[in-house]
Image: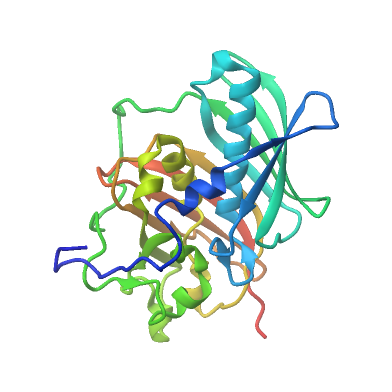
Length: 298
């Protein structure tokens, strides 16, 4: 960034200008099952949290496969886009080659239902049921103040996800996008406890931002970008997702996306986490709600 009021974020070398486009790039395969589509994909190691693939990235890749198959088999519904996805994680895929098996359950004038299985080494590891409809791009009749006092771009106080930030060492997704977290809410970084809430900024690289489909899939991915909010209560470690539901409301405007994550209840075994993705105009572009397991003390 050129403004002195914003955090300095540098792109890692060797990643390219459109790394998320490669997540959404598919090669059609011959399907052995009548009525289903099958695609080959590749999700690179930068799209990981620790050693395993990032959940939101897999949802976005699955959404790309569902969109491709619907457009191919139902061209009169090509204007539709995935507005909701309900994902179950049956395993934790590794980066590398994946396959997507796609089946249309309903093709209607207003709503289409499409199931996608993400397969690796012959096993279905993620299953997502997508609802397709027309995005709500018109001016809303009512909209709450989604962002509050969160600035549209990361200020100088924001912490970039790089080698100076412990999150940058764990969240490799930050190698494929520009990411920064608000330390005022992420008190766990200073060894302090506070409410289970976090907020951060994320922006795709220029090549990914230019493609309207990739930009929309990126917003779906961003709805799973926040660290587990129980970190602010001292719960660290892997928080396995029990179930994740993602909504896409509209295509994002160019620029930074703001992600706000909050929990309503952190129990002894599970917690909920709602994430809201707000674009540079202040519009709500994506949401997610997930139920996840509390990290167990080592």
